[in-house]
Length: 252
Image (tube, rainbow, N blue to C red):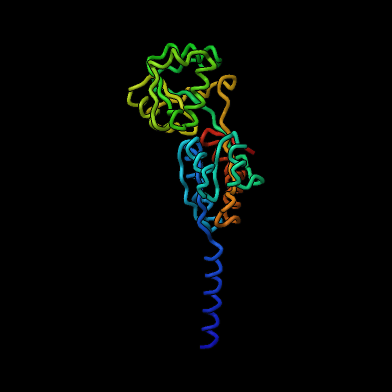
């Protein structure tokens, strides 16, 4: 009986040790990388034993939360990074490039696809369109901020105002196209999944640079080791395959 009790005690110690090593890792990230991260979380949890609690929002909104001092073990933010690292809320040396994502044009399924191969072609397309929908940059949507800059660069920002329909998030922009409420829609390529729309392509780099996303470890991370494990996974070769499947380019 004594031997049996000792054996049970040993098993309990092993189980408790495993449980102690597991941690809940909190993460915050912009919507542009949401679908990729959501797809990767189950594999990370199975392989590491850790669990992930993820929060997603607009590019500007998530960045401001980090800069204000809200604690998330792994914050994912977009450049410029200096304003984030200057707060002292993240470990600067932990900066890890995860992926880049470009703004893409979409139309309702079955509709003709316009030419967007050059800046001039994009300008012509936008001026000819009756309605254009995209995420609201004024509410922090990174895709919207990027597209606003594109229209300004093309010199048509004011001219486009009467036909613009700003919405909350890329999914809403795509839904508006699928319902036939707008003619064109733009958002990050990684956010276009609506079966009722078709991707025309990404905007030329000369007028729309892809947005980069970087991960950090928070200076007050509850479990720095678990946070590092998650960040390593999100920048791994396995993650790179997921990013490509989602229309993104791996940062490494």
